[in-house]
Amino acid sequence: MNSSYSPSPLDTLRATFRALRHRNFALFFAGQGVSLIGTWMQQIAMSWLVYRMTHSAFLLGLVSFSGQFPTFLFASFAGVYADHWNRHRILIITQTLAMIQALILALLTMTGMIQVWQIVVLGLMLGTIAAFDIPARQAFMMDMIEDREDIGNAIALNSSLVNSARLLGPSLAGILVAFMGEGICFLINGISFLAVLIALFFMKMKKPFERGKVTDVWTGWKEGIKYAIGFRPIGSILALLSVASLTASSYVVLMPIFVTTKFHGGPQTLGFLMAASGLGALAGTLYLASRKSVLGLGRFIFIGAVILGSAMMLFSISSHLGLSILFLFVGGFGMIVEMASSNTILQTIVDDDKRGRIMSLYAMAFMGMAPIGSFVSGSLASRIGATSTVFVSGIICLIGAILFARQLPGIRQLVRPIYEKKGIISQTPDV
Figure 1 (cartoon, one colour):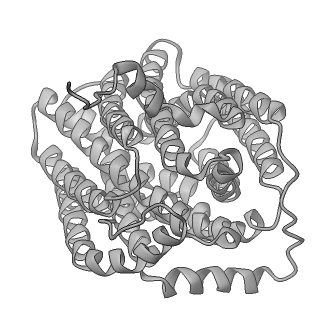
Figure 2: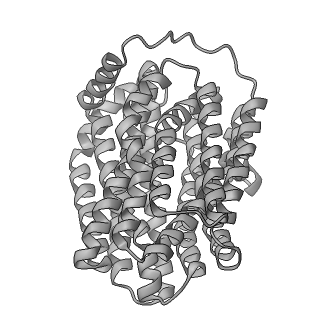
Figure 3: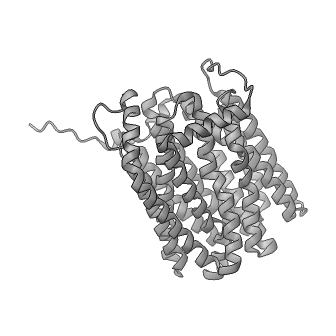
């Protein structure tokens, strides 16, 4: 008699979505699912609006820079508050403010009053909101998940949600922009925030941990920075994530140029190309969600960065739309595997009392480096062209992956005692 057990498709499905058994996370998952579609619609519509108004690669980079630079500037300080304030309340405040920003943008656009400087100012507003929202939201993941063994699955599912929206949002935006203009996308995004706000209000939070009030933000900030730099696994993971985010932003911000000059398309083509990247990312997150352990994710960080860098180089030299869609699919897969694996390891190894600060540094690496990459890419593309800019970005990403791979054995040795202490492993693992 064969005693081997092969899980059924239903068992596999349950394992893939096991974090949804936590009520608060399920509510958050549903609310974010609606809201993030609107977020991606706004991002694509804004890029197309700026390029339609200016036909300037530099201004495309500047607008993207304005929307993301505050995250780089303020996120590490916001992380101190995420460690000391009620994260649930922080999210209610930040999501409400983000809704107001989207509605203002919609009003200005639909009344024909919109100007580039207004887009820059509203981008700075949204970026500042995100600086406080992202660290709190990332750290809040542990507040919603009661069983620590499900945290990796929750992070992967949350990433799959982001990238499902990344798949649907750009496609819907392309259609709506073509027939109704950019303003309707901004309006839909503003309304979509109601979904996540309703989810937050219906959560049943346990008595929050008494973190106390922040008395010295500067001291808290220095403590978090010292912890991240002093513990090599955290520093190395954040360094590679910064490089990946910095370089990947080049093809995102320059996409309207590729669409119009290389593929001779419009907003629909832009939506399809961005959706291809989102579909690849979705495939990557579903794969990670199906994994039962955090073991081996260090290797996936390296592999994801290699895939991303290679895909950017191939996309930059491709002149065939079908191949370009394929390369964007592969690049999206690589980026999300690198990003989600980094997130999971960080959430697993970080001290609880420093979680908000480390996740704020994660936000700086993932979101905060993007504006610098956008600004540099826009400036560089105006001199050497979009094709060369994206190709060079791919090379830099590959170099970062190789440098990380050289540190991986040492990282495994340092992470192993933490995994043993937390009961994740009982024998020598492969991190």
